[in-house]
Image (cartoon, rainbow, N blue to C red; front, side, top):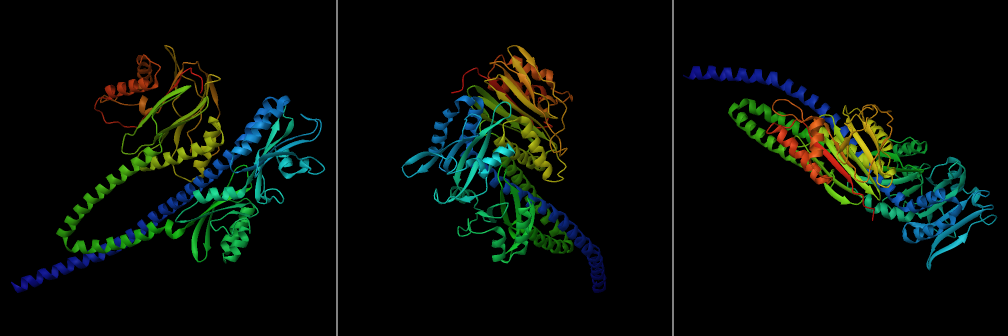
Length: 585
């Protein structure tokens, strides 16, 4: 018996030896491959996090600047619409200075020989006693050759000027926004302006730029520091000087590239800490926003993953030697892993839903609206959104290629970019083209999305729209249905330099617009029959109402009856818009 036991022990040793010889190289090779793959994915994720953080800060700054300058833009448009009565915008400018906290002063300056035969520059500014007014005229002040005037005149574009110290006026650093005015023939008439105290912008950024993983700064192309978390640095030195003080050649080199308008991602070492610097220029300004994110915070998951993989390798070797324990632990691990996946998918679904409109049903004359997005799985790739500004309603609906978490991430990025572009201009083709460019700039994600963007103008009774590979919407007027014939255009994120064009369709005061994704028209029943556009059209008519909520319910009810218990193979998304015919309040 002892000899037999010895032989069995020897066989076990041989088996253990062969297993170790075979599995150790396999585990080590797998560890290297997984480390390289996941490390690359985490680098992409880190860059995306930095990009999204930069976009959020950039959008917040643009929102601040747009809010501060909007009354000057309105004043310029009013003068262009009725040049002979240009002085009627003066109360608007005066009220804008009084009400806009960040505005210090504002002017209407006209080109001599145009609306006014001689120089004309009326300036309103804040004083301790309220808003005062004065004329800024040559020779005391030659506004015709001031940088804010000539820049707008010769570029023909609105812009924020370089910062300057307003000695004898506000005695603070300021920047001037200039908006050119032209008549219908394109002749230059003058400029409206807004002066803002940059200290107000710095205090505003104190509230939006706080982050645990790094910090945010704002500089001009020349490197002058407009904002830094350290108040002692603001308005006192350049970015390159700051880099030299902190012994950071990499930041100094980035500052020189920023001066040449080369924006992007830089690896920076500052005070012995490695950062990823993400820079973007702010439109209509000579300013650059930089987001410095600590690399150890961005790539901490990679370090943790390596530790975990090493531990898993060691444990795996031990488990091979005790098969029973290995099987039991593996079963437990699988159960925990599945539960974790379910929890993560539930979390991802909640995050995705937060990117959709908070209100699926809305009545805000002259519009009524009802929308929905029902994912086929835990998370989906469909999305929609809308915004109402006075008598205009901007809506969009899209369908991302693929399913699951990657599609939901792409959908969220697309929605953020659409909203950011809409903040700049309520123009469907512009929004679509800009979103496409930004998505393509994110890299080779190998994903695309069909998209429909429309702008309903109740006062002009028309809808302006741009379509990128998406099913066209359906218009109901009385008992009649119609659908536009869209021009061919590729989905967004397919071709970087695609240019999208607007089309227009007249509406009536009781028109109903139904936009949908192919998850509606291509819903299948157990016989593999599709719901189709014809059944969709009948559902719209059979609602016997112009109420968007009832129309939406009618469509959903018809689809549910049609597919019965068949598992959905695509997300179900639609939006119904009704012109109520009521005037905007």
